[in-house]
Length: 498
Ligand SMILES: Cc1cc2nc3c(=O)[nH]c(=O)nc-3n(C[C@H](O)[C@H](O)[C@H](O)COP(=O)(O)O)c2cc1C
Image (cartoon, rainbow, N blue to C red; front, side, top):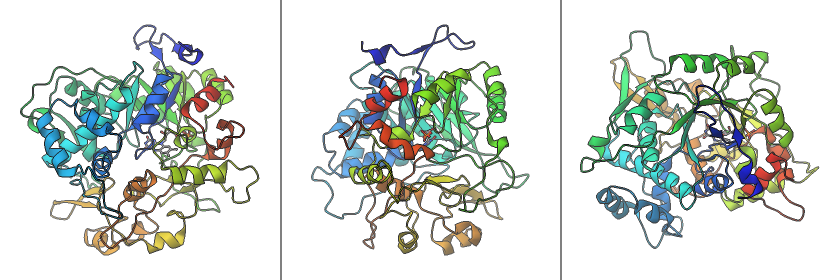
């Protein structure tokens, strides 16, 4: 056992198990595919919590298969999936041993919806099974998977797939994940579980809408054994939400990640009326700081996130009563992360060069995401952060993870995305002002990890890099005379070992 492996928090907090061993560092779940199985595996083998992103894994799986599954890892993991008839049919549909033709268009998955078809559910279960299986393969470290609560139409199948692969932790943010611990309890017994879906612009008296995943219907030929119950951590940014979840959740919450607005990816919107600073970013105030004393008083373990990427910040977090920290930005650009080499290099070249004139800060964009959440954008040449390139992209919605679900005047369910073609969005009752500056995160985030679509009109989907404010400190993880760094470098730095 090396020194890093000994560095575990050993605490006894009720109502956690006695002397639970909790990781000091959680490597944040970063979608799509940034928190890859390779990254989570490395972190987990260093005895911290390695987390894979649970977002869009149906698409990640089938695009890797269409690219020939270089290295064979997808197929190796699939060979361990309990239902080999389903695996065979997926491979027949999507696996291409020669890989795609240059500039070939990827075959798509069915879109997520309230009542997704069986193929979507198979792909979603298999996608997270594969990612967790590979992250856990060959060692005994712990692995988590991260979901966004807002993606309600794909979370149930994703959670079930991760549990089939014996995931140790489920983490969820970007919403109020009150029902998830109850879902986990049902899935341990392979029972159906449902989620109440929040309709966008729901009127009072709107009917309750449920989405359900029933393992017995989706895999009728199988009898599954009871599944291990993973721990559940809610990612929150206010003590009010933490208190609400601790009191009102059906099932058990095992802890909180308290994320500040400087973190990469989506950020919780500021409280109250949205006000922008002179650069056009949301203004956060005192009210947006989580009250850590209130959170501590709940008696559950918690970790702090958002610009905690140093040993000093780790100690600062622990001094507040936190077990440790969740870090994303530092891991996002290390060798093992899923971001493609080209964009990793470009990001490191720009932000790790001291006194680089173009060393500008990350922009908290209030409109980039089709959700109402601000989204951090790292401005980089050749990506959709360039207004010209953004304008040139023909709008198209063909992945659909972030679609809003709403009901029209007759009560019919409608799916729409503010980033889709504007005329279509307006026809579905959307407002024109809501489409302004919206970016197709679904396609851009796939492009970030090297599996961007070539659309039928020969348009190549472009990336949009996200990172937290900590990006300006990225140089500290890179050893002298190196141009890249590994997850181990980040962990050593965070633990104060170098
Ligand atoms: C590239 C990137 C993508 C992210 N994507 C997600 C995501 O999909 N879901 C999520 O809950 N958090 C996401 N995050 C937030 C991280 O999980 C983590 O909480 C955060 O990065 C911690 O703050 P830091 O960026 O200052 O280290 C993302 C962060 C980064 C940098």
